[in-house]
Image (cartoon, rainbow, N blue to C red):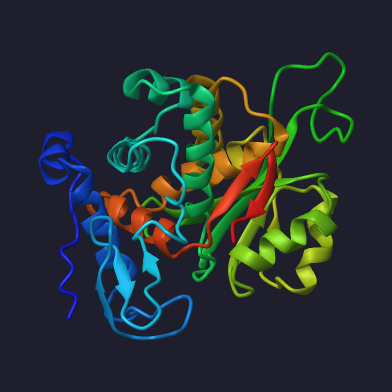
Length: 308
């Protein structure tokens, strides 16, 4: 039986004590990979019994002798640096309030920035929302632009080089603050672009509040409680616009520049931490579980491929 001991905490000193060697990391991965609800089964022949493999915590099938590592078939497969460093990077990106840039991480761990960026991209894929819990109650929705100032380009201009992002934020009842939030890169400020975002993240019964932009009007058919109000330069939805300013400040302050192609990953990273701000103790463990149980993806010449 797998009695997995979950790592809880955000203290770097305690983390360093818990994960001191590569073997500590392999053990942690193996306990997640071959858990009670997903026990060992040989990838090659389907046999259920195993013995000790070559590497730490690897499992060798007793029927066909296939040797499987805890990293095989996970986001940690074919790492270009040590698993211990990979765990440290995951810890930094999940527990630090603002995360860290690939440049900062490369300097701290003595790795090439491009190598760190590629691994950080994998982490961001694991940080994508599970899409299991829709936003409910009062939900404010608006869009914002990310990028440098362009002369003659204002508002929702579709010809702008800036990235257009739609964001939704839960407003809790009885002045208890704000709840979860999600954001998505869109091509245009239109109902056609907005609809998939609404359907993915917002309950049909939610009391959705938007500004008076015409692109939201067709959505009232599926969101009967949608209400449009004057924006008043953000004052109409103050909580949401504070959230937007925080995202923009984070992107400028930590990452400086992000191309449109990779923007969604940074939005997912931001909201992975934001939506778990009240349960940060378990956030590292959740990230590692996602990286183990997700299908491995790789970047080959900036193209995404699913590893096989």
